[in-house]
Amino acid sequence: MGKQLHCRIIRIRSSSVFDNVFVVNALIDMYSKSGNMISSMRLFERLQGKDIITWNSVITGFAQNGHGDASLSIFQKMIQENVRPNDVTFIGVLTACSHSGLESEALRFLDMMKKKFGLIPRSDHYAILVDLLGRKNRLKEALEVIERAPSGSDHIGMWGALLATCRVHGNLELAKRAAEALFELEPKNTGRYVMLSNIYATAGRWDDSHRIRRLIDNMDLKKAAGSSWIEVKNARRMFVAEDVFQSQVEDIQELLLNLVNQMKDVGYMHIEEPFYSEEWSALI
Image (cartoon, rainbow, N blue to C red; front, side, top):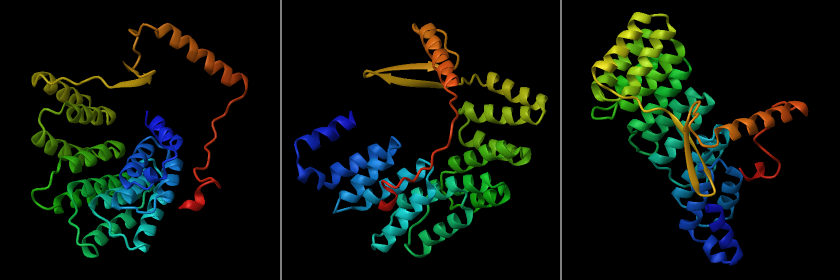
């Protein structure tokens, strides 16, 4: 629907609309959230009167789509053009560092945020840093970030990031500490209990895993089933894993099987395509 509106603007040939920062920002945000960064960059380059939202949308868009280098490149361009960043800018920058594993750069940007621009980091910023350090198995440093966070901060995101990375690295001691903090902060969040139970199970500590599961039952907590959805002709259809109640499940399974067989027949092999293309890499 957003593309239809974009095309309508082009068809009426109203150049003034593309000079409207609010309209262009909305389009950039839409394409960025959809992963279409080529369209976002074309709009970004065309817009003359860029504001902070324009810059933030592109920086965050690249970061959230896993292209940290491109995100940081746009941020450097923003600084060179003397555009002052805000706290949202640094959410995108730190996310870019997290997805690219740039922990030293993330710490430098957090320091820059405070000292150069006088911005006070929020819980969101600290949570991203905790996640990044956790990914690098620097769990003790991640814990120190949480402990140094200003009083009054919302620690749920930070402890949640630490718990998730403890699961990846199998650190039972810190996982238990993070889970206990989360149980106190949000006692009705079933997902935290399930994650700790799974961590124990992965480590072979089945008694502890069953104990957490019994705790869930005793507290009468319910876990919502994870679901996916697809939109077809403006109608949304939701389904869960191995859903056999869809009216067209047999047709869907047959179609998928035929597609898989056709791909195998032509020798399909997945090859990771480079993200940068000659068409638009010069725009960054």
